[in-house]
Image 1 (cartoon, helix red, strand yellow):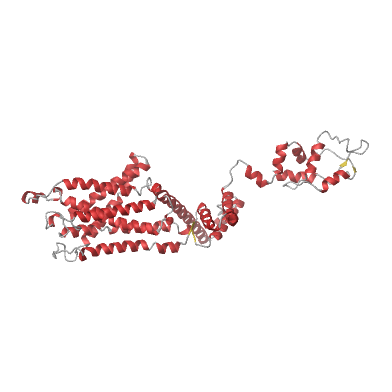
Image 2 (image 1 turned 120 degrees about the horizontal axis):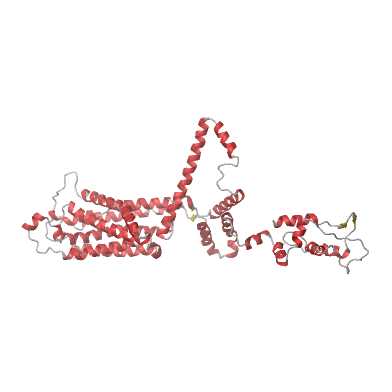
Length: 498
């Protein structure tokens, strides 16, 4: 509106003013003033504005500048632009003399999203002038993240993540080789079928139990959400899941009849039951599920990662797209304004071409829908972890896989030792015939609450209520330390360290 007023004023102000049909040149003093105009941001001369204000007082002319007998040189301007200018106060005139950008930025109205994106991208142009060289990269990364992008090569990160399955594979290899190399089994007889020897039954049973417990996560969380609010419900569902997992571990010992085939009255590493418990503790399915989930989480960032050295190129593209959206006013321009004409043309097209158009539209909608799902999944993951998944160092992910394997072995050794010392593990038929003087409920009643507490505490570290506050690094380091303690404690209760 200000530009329209300015153009109107400039159009109605002539260089020579007349009264009626007569015209006379301007006064020399006035001409001298106009030779050096005070031009504001709009290009309007201040001398013009002063004259309009003087001309508004009933067309009277200054007596000290002009003679009474001289023909009148000034007339009242009836244009809309002049009337608007003459009616403005001092503050309004000062405000109107400013540029449109200054008026827009000083306005209390919010700016549009495209403008904010363009200004965020424009900050990169002044990085070299305002920041130190060592802070340039950090500032670029910040601008990228503000626009939903992340610096780094996707292929390089994927190659580095290969160390995570390699760490799990190496840990499994060491744990598999320990029993036959360090803790030899003196008994060569096997109670399993010929083509189904150990450790196949143990590994398959532990994988089946983990799968069953893993499928109960969602029902347990849904049940907890009915009772408590979501943040507390995650803690309750974690505790319930820990109860289910440890109950399934005890059920595995009963299904394999570990106590029925023990050669010693108490758990000891020379007994064949130690090897059975050892293979049961190697939960391969849990590690495989974690690895698959890790790769799925990384795949969500495939389309938003910027290769090193191309940050400015991507920011320029964002700036160009933001300008296009701002000019068009409608980011979704797949349909023109002539919608009715387009519909008539589509109806007149052959059937095959219409099918191709509908197929292309469906595929585009599917792609957009997949992008929205990826954005939602990334936001949910970042709410749980507190940071983007690709920002988690690969070393921390390796620690998590090592921690899960070692913790499973340690808790299984502790739980099985206390259970096999309890009368609960003795068959009813054998309890009346065979006397077990060392059998007692005390070890099981002590170790079971400890195992549940440790397992619940470590699992709670990865809940949305705790993990964003302490960070993934802290959770991984604490879990590794506690897992190693449980591992060596489990070896101790079986007499391996004695």
